[in-house]
Length: 114
Image (cartoon, rainbow, N blue to C red; front, side, top):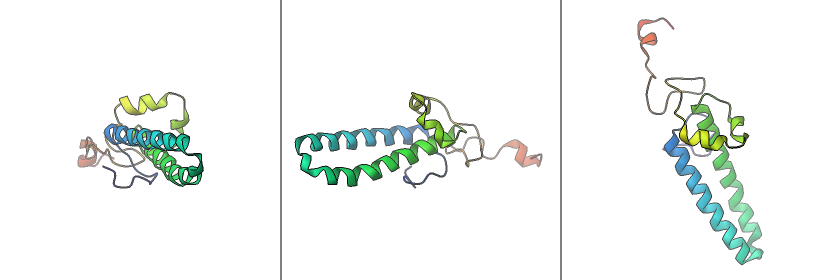
């Protein structure tokens, strides 16, 4: 888990995406709390928030890839719930191997029909 959290390539499991989302919500909420208490730290807020958004977009893109979709699917309203609760594609897809390892070495490849 979390081998390349800022990369947009590859696939991740539901667990990693869920943990990423929790991290995003905790850090974002903390930053908002501190910004409301002291507006003079807005530059600090911006410096921290930009990589945080990049992190969440990268993790969302990899989760979309795990479902066999483009990363652009994450901008669909409520697609977040689909990314959290839906299972991944079985085996390899165009974005890489299944992170669970299920179906990566299918019987079709073993007998040479692919």
